[in-house]
Image: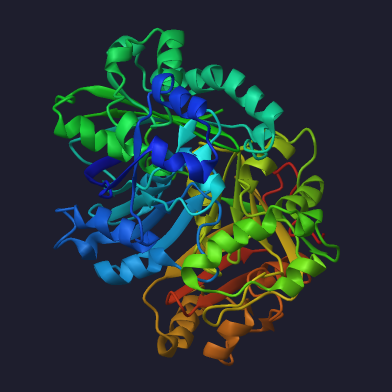
Length: 310
Length: 287
C-alpha cells in the first residue's frame, strides 16, 4: 500500500502582498479588496531572483530521510502544473538528481493535470513502486513552480499563484500515511485560457463545486469510508471561499478543512497538497490512525482526490 | 471518473493492439496566435535564449492537440471507450499553456484519465508505455492509448545542443489486455561506452531472433546492433513510426538511447503472438 515516508516543504522568504502584486496583474483596488475579503487571500510567497532548480533543491534539502538512502531512490518524479516551464532542452529535474546523487534514478515529469498533478504523481509513483521487485525502493516526488508568465501568476477572480515547493519520499509500503484511494476526473471540455475567455471562466466557476465534490466523495467511497470517518481535509490553496462552498455542499465541517496556508502562501500549483500535509503534521492536526482527504483541481481541467491513513 | 485503491503489483500485462502514425505537413493556426510570443519571451527570459523572430513572423509549427486529435479515429472507434491516455513528448508543444492530455481526453471515446510524460527525451515514450502497463496490469484500466508526438518549430535559439525534429509526427499506440505481448525495459546511469553491450545483452536474453529498430542516435552509440535505423529527422517518434509502418514479423525490439540522461530504453513486441480475443487485434496496423 503506497505510503508517504517523509514530506518536506519550502516556503520562499519573500512575502508579497496583494497590493504589491496588483500593478503586475493589472488588478484594481476593488479586485484586491475582493481577493482579500471574499477569497481570503493576503500575500504570496515568492523566491524573487531564484530559479526553479533553487526551489526544488530547497524542498529536497528538508528531507532528512533522503540522506543516506539515495541508493534506494529508483524514481524521481516532478509533478508540474504548467505544461511548459523552461526552454527546451533545459531540465532542472535532471540537475536536481545530479545535485542529490540520484543520477541512477529514472527521472521524468508528469504534467497536464495542472494543479491536480501532485496527486497524479503520487499515484504514478505508487504504481512504479508496486511493480518494482525491490520492496525497499523509494520514489521522490517534487513539486513547485516559478510564476514566470501571466498564466502562471493569476487565475482571474479565483487565485494568485505562489512559489512554494515540496518534496515527498514515497514507498510501496509503510506504517504511516498510507494511500487508501484515488479518484480523478479529467474534464477537457474546460480547455482554454480563463484569463481571456470570460464565458469559459464563468462556466468553470459554476460547475467547479459540483465537480470537485464528486471526486472528494468518490475517493471517500472508494476507500470504504464515509465523510464522518475523515478527520481532516487538505485542500489546494486556491482560496477559502470555494472550499467553504464545497465543504457545505458535501456536508463536511469547514473547521476541519485546513485553510491556514491560503492567506500566506498563494496557490503553489501542484505542491499545495504536500505543503498542507506538512502544516497539518507540524500543527498537530493529524493523529495516528486518522483518515484524511486531499483535494485538488487543475485548469484544463482535472479534479482529483486522495484518501490517506495517518 | 477514474477511481482506484492503493496500487498493487500488476496481475496482467499490456499488449499492443495497433500502432498508427502520421506526418503533418500543415501548420497550426496557433503558430500565429498573438499569445505565443509573450509566453515564449517570458519562458526564455531567465535563460537568455534569443527568440527567433523570423519563425514567429512566418508562423510555423504544429500543436500536439490538433495532431493527436486527428489521429484518434484511426486508433479507436466511437464505441470503443478508452480508460487511459498518456501523451509523451520531448521538445515542447507549440501551444504552450494547454493541458493537451486533458483536451485529448475530451476528444476521445470514454473521456479517459489523461496525463503527459516529458523531461526525459526519447525515454518519455517508454515511460508512458511502462506506466500504461502498470495501469492495465492492475486491472484499473482495460484500454489505453499512448500518444507520442513531436513538432519541428522551436521559436528560440537552443542554449545547448539538442535534437530538433524536421517534421511534425504523431504516433498512437493502442494497448489492451489482449494483443501482441509487449515488455518495456529501462537502464539508467548508462554511459555511451556501455550502450552497445547492454543492448546486445538485452536482445540475446530474448533467446530468439529479433528485429532491432533503433534511433539514429542509438545506432551511432551501438554500431551493428540495429536492423532498422529510424530517420534522424524524427528523433522522438522515429522508432515508433517504423513500428507503425509495419512489415516486421516475430520479435521486434524498439530501442533508444538518451545520452543526456544516460538512459537506455528497449520495448519488445512479439508480433508472432496475437491473442485473437482482442476487439481489434489486427497485429500492428499501418496508419
